[in-house]
Amino acid sequence: MTVAVTRSKAEQALTESFEAVAGALPGSAAVREARRRAIGTFAALGLPHRRIEEWKYTDLRALMKEAYAPAVGRPAAVDGRALDAALGPALAALDAIPIVFIDGVFAPGLTHVGGEHGRSWHFDPLARGLAQGFHWLEVLLGEASGPRSGAVIALNTAFATDGALLRIVEGARLTKPLHLIFATGGVQKAAIATRNLIEVGAGADAVIVESHVALGAAASQHNTVTEIAVGDRARVQHLKVLAGGEGAAASAHIGTWIARLGAGAGYRAFQLTAGLPLVRNELHVAFAGEGAKLDFSGCFLGSGAEHVDTTLVVDHAVPACESRELFKAVLADRARGIFQGKVIVRPDAQKTDGKQMAQALMLSEDAEFDSKPELEIYADDVACGHGSTAAELDADMLFYLCSRGITLSDARALLIESFAGEAVDRIEHEPLREALSTIAKARLAGLARVRAPTRAEDQP
Image 1 (cartoon, rainbow, N blue to C red):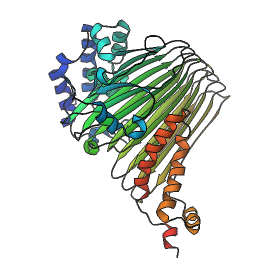
Image 2 (cartoon, rainbow, N blue to C red):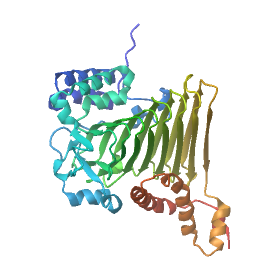
Image 3 (spheres, helix red, strand yellow):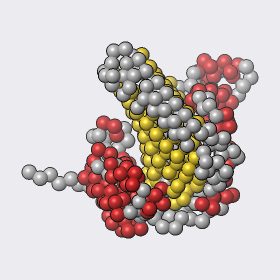
Image 4 (spheres, rainbow, N blue to C red):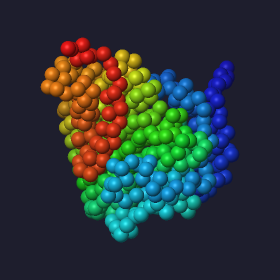
């Protein structure tokens, strides 16, 4: 018996739009073939839905009612002042090397690589590598076009227009952060797919920031993938800032990080998410060498009816590695936050040390927090643990602060900032820590004004 699978309107539109734009997408013959296999994989799988365990809280098939037309062609014209305004004062003033993409296309006029480029690090736009047929890139996309990659990666492989190819030279110590800026500036709704491939050489030290901003009022659907290989004994700080702007009302962001850590490597990752109605951030980390360390923290701030999902898989495949994960959620109104964290300890991964914690601060009775921490341990000499909490603001602490002459609104703001600040404080790079703290505080100030009944409000 043959069972016909009914596809949603958005799923049908995605497969049909590929045929319309396939000829305009960059790539050699091998890349074009990988794209066709990838869209075939997506057509077979469809959008992820609640019957898939990893997507049970974020039913993309139900949430994604409409698929926007792919942004292929000339991007919107954007000047530096408009870009700085979209980034905000904190990030615009950051002393970093900007590498800018507008509507999924590299913007050389807004990119300033500096003197270290070509010596300590190298950059190429993904579109150039696809068009020139870099063999390793063709192989990589070919591997990502099969059914094991999943529907989201397959869609990215099919539609990716551009992104950053970064290589940090072995032993290099970058003096400034590399700032990858992805901005949407179009006047029409658009779907954008970008792909970043980063290789950090052995013993190198680098800070990499990804910022996603909107310059106009048009909504977007962004599917972005970053793959990073951290060499032996290398040190990387990798940060992502996702803050909705004027066009966020109907926008969605699906982001995937895939990291591979070499022996003795140190990978510190941080993500700040706020202001978009639908967000799914995934991180997949594989320990490939002994003695590597992972520190991954994040803060997602939700209000209105926003839906923010953070899902990570940490794979301890080798001995003597350490992982730490800390996530903070502040949820107001009818916002929904999701945290799914799976830590796998393979049979050979003795001496593994893994700790994970997810905490939510509920500012409204209508907010929702779904947490699913998981441990899969197949070794016996390990130290692993996980935890999850959800609570309202402490009424006793509010009363104490108010009794010292602090207004209720200021007391709420202080407690909320203190709660979220624990995650932000784990950022080692001081200018970035200050910049992201400024952004977070501005968002939190708005959430602090959302009132919920507390004992403190009943005090004389």
